[in-house]
Length: 126
Image 1 (tube, rainbow, N blue to C red):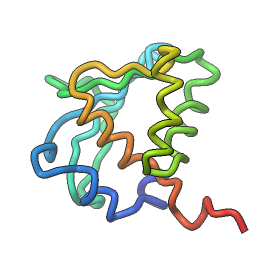
Image 2 (image 1 turned 135 degrees about the vertical axis):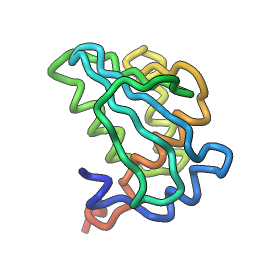
Image 3 (image 1 turned 180 degrees about the vertical axis):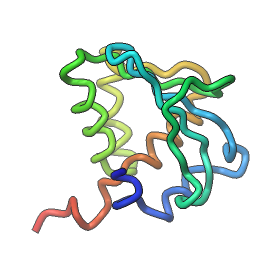
């Protein structure tokens, strides 16, 4: 929902390369017993999230956090800016195994960068 409201159109064209278009990336939440499937696309209007288990994902992003903190961690990732500093703020979660990536790191990073809406005007301080 945040992506529909505050998503940046240029992020899709910039971070989802033509070779990544159409690839399936799964985001798992083991503590919530659920997963969300994303199909990478270069157009924000065609970007869909489905709550189902994918057939053959290229990459899987696993948010392995306590049940109460799962939504907070996902929210932190979404509110980051989609630049190198935003990516660097994700790596402590990877090192502590709260965020795991299986499969194609390129597809997983592309998904994370598309989901990061921190450059939107709503997040700028006055």
